[in-house]
Length: 243
Ligand SMILES: [Zn+2]
Image 1: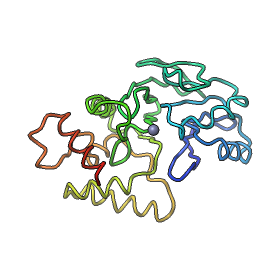
Image 2 (image 1 turned 180 degrees about the vertical axis):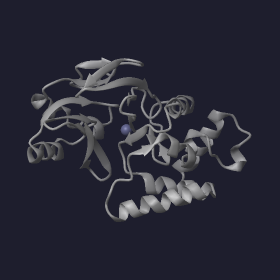
Image 3 (image 1 turned 135 degrees about the vertical axis):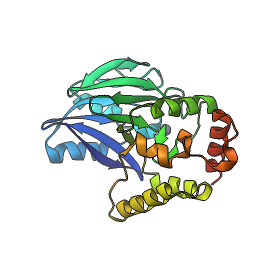
């Protein structure tokens, strides 16, 4: 098993779980680059995993489902056409011999779920946790998104974080503006080098995020340290929205 990526739109990654002959896709928002990838690598589409209902995550379902050998897995949201297996918290399933557990992560949207594999030590977290940041709040409350991020923060430090967008540089520029910290500066330099070579900064991992991502609330600015978790989170999210 290996994880590959397909670029889509301006900064989306469609994550690909693959073996020698088959692939399972996470959030195929655009069918065109997926079809090209399958063709060029002579691969068969096994399953599709969906984290939430936004168009840049589900846009490929209708065109890809007819060539999908298996199932489309996704959250309980009737607004998403084509889901075969509706998932909720703690549901378990496997695709291409990888076992996944579902973690509900509302906040960015109300239907948002993440896919966690303990054996493979990875999580596909959609638009909930980004490297150095987190998703915008479109539907949920600060409480919900804060709680969802805290759930992800309890995963083992070595868990690889596969999020959907290449937002790392912009996120770290915000973090650098509010926290003066060597870990953040070093990771910013590391990420810039990656981007200069046109390589993804992802996957990240939970241990790293705890040291550079204030939205996990482990390393926060001095002036927010007296606030409750959710109040601190709210201040950070508002500041990032205005950055
Ligand atoms: Zn989204």
